[in-house]
Image (cartoon, rainbow, N blue to C red; front, side, top):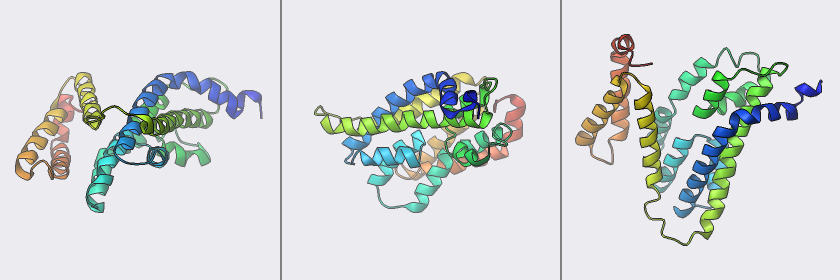
Length: 236
């Protein structure tokens, strides 16, 4: 094997592309680790969940699910809907991940929003195996998240100030994601459908039971009005 194709060299080439992801993942990961620690869990929890789940929004949500009543069906449905966008990521990456061999299962598992953005848009450096490069980007991104979450879990043990309200970080994160999507879209049909469905279901089912019905309503409305929304440019 040529030196330029060695994994170490590939990681060196991939690292610069992941620096923006590193800064975000370390900061948010530490916040997540602290949040789960002050919620009463050992630092082992954020470390293991960042390794096995590796889904930021779902991991934040998992904290409240662990603290709530055992409800496997509701947990499954919420996890499925929250991460459903990755189905479309996977479809978009079919051609790029073609021929990656044994690395493909991990590439699928590690396809977060940020990793998708990098691997979807990057031009693989000349002379570098694309499977190795995509793998390096994916693994580096996960290492950033695991490191941040683990450090946060450990640092949480030494926090002595009042952490009341720290759980609002999840609400803030989803709010920022929503605002970013709103600003990116020229048309806001999908966002308005989400707001309308959530408000109606909140009124009908109450604050403790509206999430699943609202997600079902959003899915149905998007499926029914998909073509008109696409024509209007609302799904771009």
